[in-house]
Length: 488
Image (tube, rainbow, N blue to C red; front, side, top):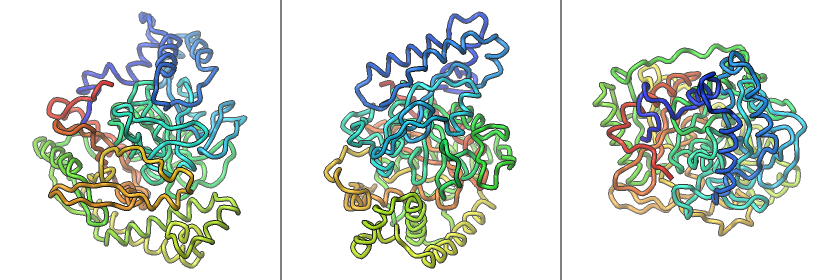
């Protein structure tokens, strides 16, 4: 796995250290200087990750520099430049899902939380059409490239977010995730991300409404410490970023269950016939397991007690219902016309009886997870079945439910070649989305592989601090035995 901090005593390249430098009375570093440098990097970049710049960013940084030292030191993100996924509302900046665009007059709650903590919004990052792809391209803003290899996808739907973080155009980015949309891009671009427990961080836009099932808002960053810093800002009980409508507004997040890798109990779900993984993913699992064992962790290869194919179907029906809840009448009419020939379209117009039956099955799956976490602290799985794949816009004019005809080329450890249906890639992300559990994704670099591989640490309900701590500890000890973050 990568490390930009090395260990807990070597944290110069973190958001907290940057905020501290900006607030120091003896420092020559100002927020305006830091923001100017990042804006220059954005202008020089050819990867098309930040597609909307904030014209007020430098003014906001200068205003921050006028604060007293005490005022600056009270802000955990004081003067730190961040970016935002394109479809999250920021007052005065274009919001878009890659199809429609508008300019909101007010912020979403997560933006208010970031601003309250002193962050400077640099701009907004690209997404795929309707935010429903493992690539990031659309006809309005164009194609985002992977900064590690421009011929490859940066992932999606928060692909612009992960690309910007990896290229160091921003200190972190806020994305969203209903099927891996912060974790898959982080995996493809070799950075870190956190999908929080559902209902802890607000998913609201500037106009409040009940949150969409399974959909979450979470950070992407270059190290695990930064994930925790931003998570604490968004998930604190007094934060505007705390969810208002989920029933968890006043929930107290438990402390981390772990302080060391020694003795931590880890269940490893390494592969599955429902979504076979590539040889490089298998190698990343083996390398991480060896590292865990060397630190005294208790590791067992196992999984929750349910049928994997059954879980995938339950997830796909649930996510279709969640997406259909925001579909236009025209789109629903198109789904009905194709329901007999396309499964994705069929599930978008499922009956209430079918949905209710699916929710009952989902409850059984959640119970199986709860049983697993009675014995284990962490469930370790792949983030995606393969590393970043080449750009594929062959069906760019087709709606996402037809893009299910695409394939993912997976070469397994034994050499078997599998043409995996494209949207089966959601299998590994759904391991956390379906039961509403937290998951922290981290990169593993292999000596003989060109691209990083993403793995994820899944935790029990509201166990966000445990998964974040687990990945931080793993990153710290892995700095010497697993390649550091590759400079671009």
